[in-house]
Amino acid sequence: MAKPFSPRLLQEHLKGARLFHGREAMIASFAKGGVVAEVGTEAGRFAARILALAEPGELHLIDNDWNLFESGLLADGLASGQVVRHDGLSTVELGKFPDGTFDWIYIDADHAYASVVADLDVAKRKIKPSGMLVLNDYTRWTRKAYEYGVMPAVNELVTGEDWRVIALALDRGGYNDIAISRAGLKP
Image (cartoon, rainbow, N blue to C red; front, side, top):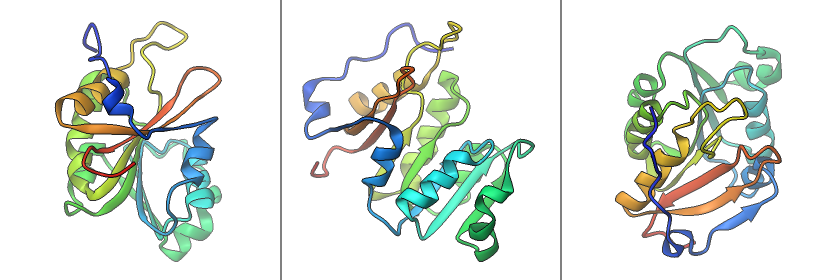
């Protein structure tokens, strides 16, 4: 269950943040060749876009249900070892990596508040000091009035632990993506 209200982000949390017309444009702006994880892969369609646009040296896909996964989308990367599948709960699988492994982590797993908080708690340790966390569906409500926990969880991390927003990617349906990093970094 989400909290009743998200902490308010202040202008200081947004200093230097970039605005993008969509998540693909945002992902394409990231440095190439890094170590990346996608938490919550489902069919693998966005993982294929990450691979094409961000050109990571390694792309780790984490999901606990591969029934919808379309392996043909990432066949070359899987065959070469550039793309690696990890089967299990996001917090468990992320927890297996050494701290400071990833340049960035894309989180699109369970959107319930407690799940997002748990994913963030592990993910923030697994990125490099200069790394970032990118979360899909930075919105409060779905079209079906299902309450998402992404916005309150992100806002709590940003305001409570001195992080900042570095980018926001707009989605025409309001299911925006947000990228955050530790506040000590230059925008």
